Image 1 (cartoon, one colour):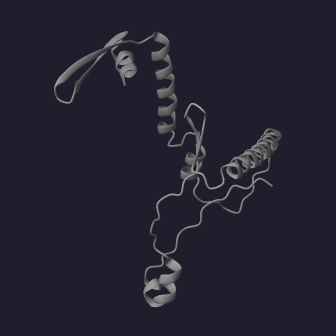
Image 2: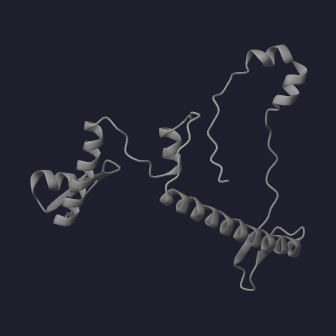
Image 3: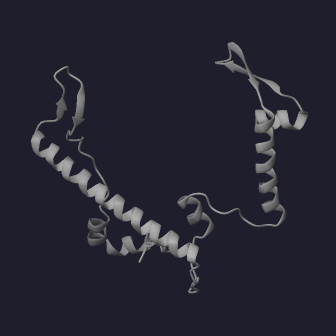
Length: 170
């Protein structure tokens, strides 16, 4: 917002005034470079171009893809060479992650075996390296028991959820 104010008013220095706890008034000085203002203007130009054409910008995260594309159709996209390379890279990354997860699990199992029933591992100086403690007991609602005990009432509260999309690399 500070960069926006500087870009709109053609200034390089701006002050942010804050009242902490309703009692302490503090100001912070910011010097905004022309490069920062230019970068903001470029980002806003891209955003407004999407607004003007009534299109969504491309997703930048997996969560955004879930929001933008919540359902699928039966059409298939024919892969370009670039997409084939990207899929091959993704397969390689996922295999590497799996291998690292397997290695990490083996090390964790060794540490847990060393701990046995003990709740923590500490250094000679007393620094805690690992804890593995029993958590407090908790209560949760068992839908299976409820369904067995009162199937007619259970059915009144069952709602249909739309399916989610699953991303599977083949």
